[in-house]
Amino acid sequence: MEPTTDWLLLWRQIVEEHEKSHESNSRRKKDVWKGRAARFDKNVKKRWTRPDSSRSFILGRLKANPGATVLDVGAGTGAWTCIMAPEAGRVVAVEPSESMASILEQNVRDLGLNNVDIIREAWPEADTGLCDFSLCSHAMYGCPDFRGFISRMEEVTEKTCFLLMKMPAMDGVMAEAAMRVWGHPYDSPNFQIAYNALMQMGLYPNVLMEDAGEWAPWTHGSIDEALDDVKRRLGLKDDESHDGFLRSLLERRLKLTNGRYVWPRGVRTALIYWDTEQTPA
Image (cartoon, rainbow, N blue to C red; front, side, top):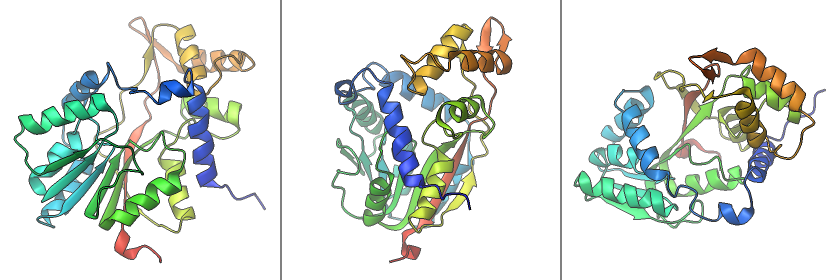
């Protein structure tokens, strides 16, 4: 019999491997979005000019529950907060980055929203009070304690929890690289691990695959640049033992187009959701 995977442990291990790719733990304690928050906000606003099924689904739930309170965990510059606020009684936006929270605050002011509370603290430590719905959009990847992150969301949510997460293709370039280096195809915390971790916790959530299409592919100016990026993502900065395989992989799977090495497409977004009223005691 094959050994059972401990998905919660796997999530922690991958997050901790990603931590190693940063220069030091002290750097992680700083505002990593400083100097990048404005560009992030601009890119999100551009991307959100197109409709998608996740927004339609969640806003539909809010419209069916007038006056509901909503928690936005890791609110960033406020894309979700600002789109949910007109349909909600109150939105509590939790965002620890000062750079992100400052733009979030400005976006809220620009739209004249008066039902948004901004809490500049990290999750799951933030004290938010109870809410009807909770949402976390791509803001859980840096937390090694997935169980604690989700359990805290459940504690404060009276109706439904929503998670938006990336779902890379299982045969993607990074999956092949991770299989060689780590012995499994998961190069980062993602939907596949999270869904299994939720089931390990006794939760059996629903899934809606976003219909907005796959994410734009990565590009690099050279194979050397792509190799450095892959090694950074896999925590191999000073380890050359896999360089030959990884270089061969990139030369085989990346395509040179208009002077740039383009990765295959393959990352989508999955919406995971479940009603806390049905959570086992």
